[in-house]
Length: 452
Image (cartoon, rainbow, N blue to C red; front, side, top):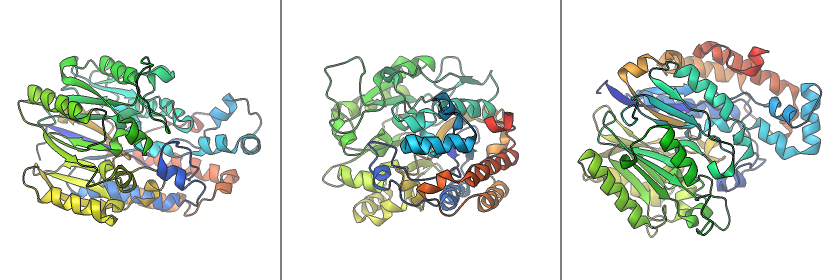
């Protein structure tokens, strides 16, 4: 593998309070499995196994720590008083949904953690990070402060990395992170085409919006990030989600499309005016890279939006292998549907694209809450020098993998029912797990309880 500039996948570790509360309105899987019994231990082990598969393929794999939950700081800020147990009991009586929100382990879906621009694309030659404000979903809106702290711990050198605060917390600037963003390029070291996908233009009151579920990402947020990251306007495109796809459960565009380097796999109903959207991508890519973009369109006749959402076909990871070919990291759910498994087999057999293999992964605990392989990772393109300037303790090795498996088996429950959120022992177990994790990853005192 060319060891100069590579894409690193930073996956979110599943937290000890992983549970199903149906908090994500517009996410069919999360809504369907609300209040069912979860298995936090299986969830974190499944996530670690996926990371190991990528590591074994020869890719660089990073780990992001889970957030502290329950987030009692949020409850205190909303007027709840007393001891930790008293606050939780009061919240359970007054607003069970609020209690579920502050226990949510949703930070596991690191694709929503931030939007990242590599140094090859920015005017100042630094890697830029903007944590997502995630304000359309309350349980996720409380993540951005810690996300910013962790990213600054890992990417510390100010000469190499630029950290922006989350966008202003207003619905006009609703930002869902990299789940609505792709970078297309001839190689990771080359200048890329930054493609932002939005669901609504907040200042345009005439546009057609979804009828059932909310359009989360705004054009205004995407445009602000492009400016903050000092991107070349000539190498930046903005594409609008199809409102019908949002109503079908495509709450983020990474449920309807996935790109990697010079390949873009997408559903024909992913975008409003899909033909024009794809034409813009193709023309812009050719101008920047002097190459043709490999477009793989999946028709509705072949795979319906419903099948795409159920299988999470497009939420697969598309990665470049050490030999220069590409592989699809797909959930087992895509293998279990004949429609999607046949399609993936045909794509890998087609020599007109560089995709040469499929690796199916079991992340059913995440999938039941509406998060596939691509949801679990934040992609960060780094040069060899930039990687050397990052915190090395978060990069997965076989030794670290084994240590994290042992850690998960020691601290995580294998069964969590909705009523268990009231168990004081769960809070103590979670703190102990996170305290031990910071030692393993060498991150220091990053959690609020460690600073008290």
